[in-house]
Image 1: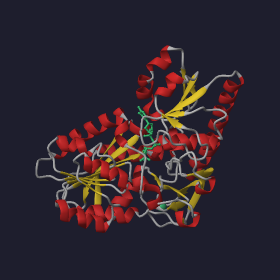
Image 2: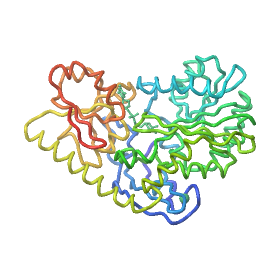
Image 3: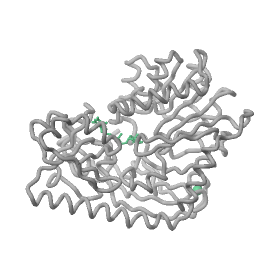
Image 4: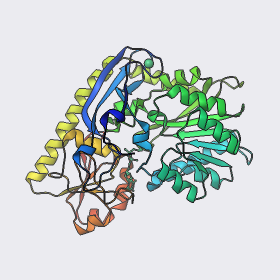
Length: 421
Ligand code: JHZ
Ligand code: ZN
C-alpha cells in the first residue's frame, strides 16, 4: 500500500489505555516527528511520500502500561515488511533453543499442533518443524508469508484476529501451543488478540510469547526501540492483567538477553486446573515495584537521561568529523534509524549503513536517506569508525567484521551509553 495520504495512515490518537481503559495517561518521552523507520526508500522516493508522525510514549497510571500516543494503520506498516528474522544467527540460535525448550517443558508430540502468530520468515517455526511437530504460521506481510510458504512452512497470510483464528483451526485443527515473539507490542486491539488466542487453544493448550522487557528499556536506556510499530512497552504487571481479562493465566516467566532483554511468558487457559505459577512471576513483579516502575515519577526522569545520550553521541561524532574521521554504521535496524533521526545524524556524519538483508540493500533509510549497502562496502570504502546500530547484536557484528577490526577500525556502541571499542 502506498503511503501518500497522511490522514489515511493515522488510525487514531490514544486517549484511553489499551489494557485497562483508564484515561490517566502521562506523556513521558517525546522523540519528535519521526518517519516510518521500516519503510525503506528508493533513490527517487519523493519527500512528499515520506510522512512523519509524532513519536511519544504515555504511561498509564492505573495499570502501568506504557504506550504510544497514536496508532498508525497496520496495513501500511505490515502489508509488506523488510525485517527478516532469520538474518541474525544469534536469533536463529535463540529460536532453536526456544523450540527445544518448549517441546521438552510441555512434552509436545506429533499430535500437538504448534501455531505461530506473526511467524515472519519461519525462523522459529522451522525449528519446531525440525522437531517433527506439525506447524502453521500466520503472517500479515505478503512478501514474507510467500517466502515461508516457498520454504515449505505452511503460512496463512493474515493479521491475527477472531476470523483468522477460525480459518486457522479449519485448516490445521486446534493448537496445543500458540507462540508469538515480538508481536504483542505491535497490536492495538490487545484484548481481541488474546481473546482469539484463548478461544483457539486446545483445553490443555499453552500460549507462549516473548516481548522486549520494559525494565531493560528503562535501565539500559533503550529509548531507540520506540517507533510507530511498537504500540506497547510491557512490564509484567499489565501483561498479567491483560491475560487474565481474557481467560488466560500466567504459568511462568523467563528472562533472555535477546533484543536487549526480553521476557518469555508462558500462559494457559484459566479454566484448566493448573499448578500455582512459578516463583519467577512474583520475583519479577516485586522487582518492577522496587525499581519504581509503577510510579510515573521514574518515567519523567527518563526523558532527561535520553537527552543526555543524544548530546554525548552527537558531540563525540562531531569531534570525529572535525578530525576528518570517516564513520559508517552496521545494522539498518528500525531502532538504528530512530537513533539517527532523533539525534539529527545524516549523511554529513555517517557515510552509509551496512546490512546483510538483501531486501534492504540498495535502498535508503527514511528521514536521513542514508544508503543501505552490503558488507563489501566495508572493504571498498573502509571507515575509521563503525557505529553499531543493532547494539543488541554487538558480538555477532564484531565477529562478522574481523577484517575491519584487523585494519585498526574501531566500533561505537551508542546504547546503553556511548562506548568505543
Ligand atoms: P534488529 C526488530 O527491530 C524487529 P529492529 C521488530 N520490529 C521488533 O519488534 C524488534 O526487533 C524486537 C541486520 N543484521 O533485530 C538485520 C545484519 O545485517 O536489531 C537487521 O536489519 N547482520 C519486529 O529492526 C538489523 O541488523 C547481522 O549479522 O530495531 C537488526 O535489526 C545481524 C545480527 C543483523 O532490530
Ligand atoms: Zn492502563
